[in-house]
Length: 152
Image 1 (tube, helix red, strand yellow):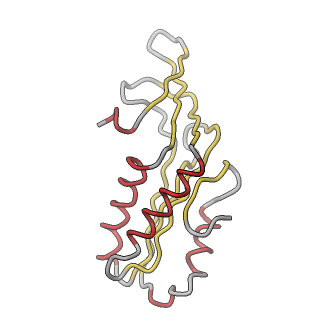
Image 2: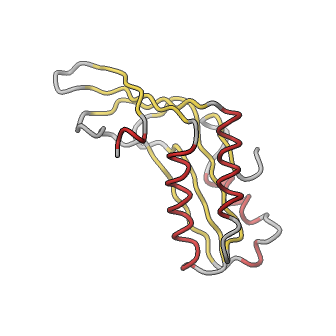
Image 3: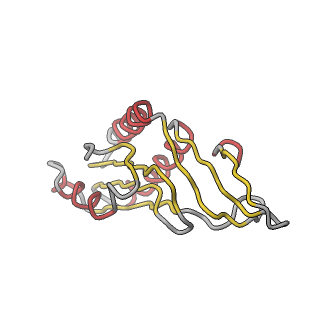
């Protein structure tokens, strides 16, 4: 298991592992709150078409480096004890977990903005590649590589 950030093959990391990791932090005694973001496979794409499955790939070395840098940067914020980002790779069905982001800190007011920043940064900075398999309105299946940047 990586320390507090990285990409993992589907099935090798889960929310329970993350929760245990946070509690084992040497600074955990300073935490008064923990918040989580769990990203899951949405069953409909931006055009309203039915998503059949999602495949996630990454430039793993760079993704691990980028996720670690984001966590290191955010941990410097006042009152923040721990920040972790773990993205899963592989093939996923609708509803399955894709990513876990956690922030632990002294007070709830400190952790929510950091959680939101962590999510936005990993989505825009990490070399993660998403391929959607969708069923279009005519009943034809198609695969498209999707960029978060294309959705905004």
